[in-house]
Length: 208
Ligand SMILES: [Ca+2]
Image 1 (cartoon, rainbow, N blue to C red):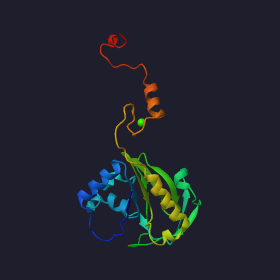
Image 2 (image 1 turned 120 degrees about the vertical axis):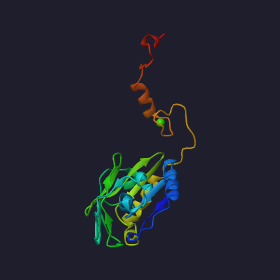
Image 3 (image 1 turned 180 degrees about the horizontal axis):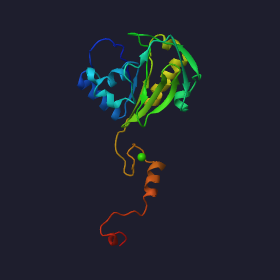
Image 4 (image 1 turned 180 degrees about the vertical axis):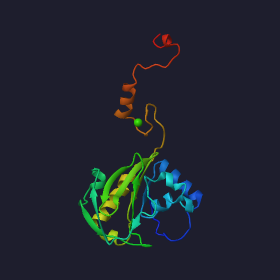
């Protein structure tokens, strides 16, 4: 489990590429990653040379300079999820921390990302996706002291940590057709949907 937060919005320091690659490997092999405001922002601003490798791991990008300064922000459920929504009021309003005139970054979901909460300020509050065997969640806000003074926000962070902790795949299993480290009905459905297909040439060889 890893918690990443970039509060350094006004400097040009980057995470070393070796660190970003290690983090990418950590997630793809089953680790959970949670990011706060500025991480997605600087990952999208790759021309400034920050988080270029890590950018591919994140479930969102951001439009240029799409951040602003708000004192209070309201999050509401978009896609219901029993883990993410457990014991969190919806909607709930919290005070937002501000660093470098930014309380929130606008998030644009990548294909395959799930939007769990929206924000009344900049559209999307919390979203996540599967990356390899791991999972990543991005918050639009700082996950700072002000945010964490809200019991709902604290609970949501706790839930996000649970959701992202998918587990580590320790080995391949014969029959795991969709390569998600478990053999279940999804694998069976793939087999059934392709049943009696045969790509042998000549076709006459198929059923001999
Ligand atoms: Ca499977």
